[in-house]
Length: 348
Image (cartoon, rainbow, N blue to C red):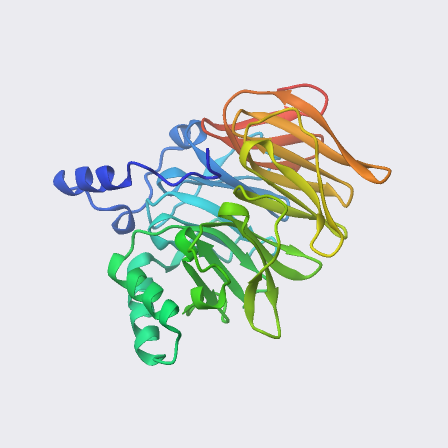
């Protein structure tokens, strides 16, 4: 049920691949099979100017230049599952996923290069830990554990404020930052108020400031003075799988149909939605409205009416949906069985 669920059979798959003599996902490029990619699990979709970019299992990255009517598969240097992307313009973007993979494109997704993986990350953590003996006991223990466990942890979200400064965040508080566009990376976990090591599922910008959400109601905001992600009081103790900025307010969404609108300063109001299925992702369509997609394949529109927000169900269900983008008068949806479109008037 979790957003962009971690692959539960990872250890079995790794063992099987090793026994069969097949190179591990980090050591081989994604297979080129557009038909398979279009009908298999896609976990994220983003816009790069007028282009759509979708990412998913086994290193699949697909692009569409006609609003999702047709797709092309792009070459990718790894076959690791990819779960999230972030573009800051039509050319420059990053993708993250399993095995600690971070990919970068400078041409709108036509080509990708690996700028970090779990093996490199483990080495960087070891160097950082050895050169920072003044770290607190908890931070040293966390980094020692990350280093010993190696390359198995996924990054689940990526955020860049500009072409140079960004963070990648993931399972068990696994986190790195970069100040040079991804050419070099520095461990970042010790600067996050997440002592229990909860998964961090999504990062987003609200009023020009980095925020992040995760397991057990984890809600974080960047504190420039303290130079860390500080924990905020959350209106819900269950997992948040994401959030979007709506003007002066934030729409939080997650487990069991939970959705709240508000801010840490003004307080939170629960949005009434006729579902108990988890919401995996959302897209803001204006400062007053957003579209939510969930595990049961339902699509909801949440919009401001007067002083409160109301909801409307646009699709009654289907394949589990993981993300959505608006393209003209249609929604482009990605999920457990690839891509589909939903007209704002009728389902295609």
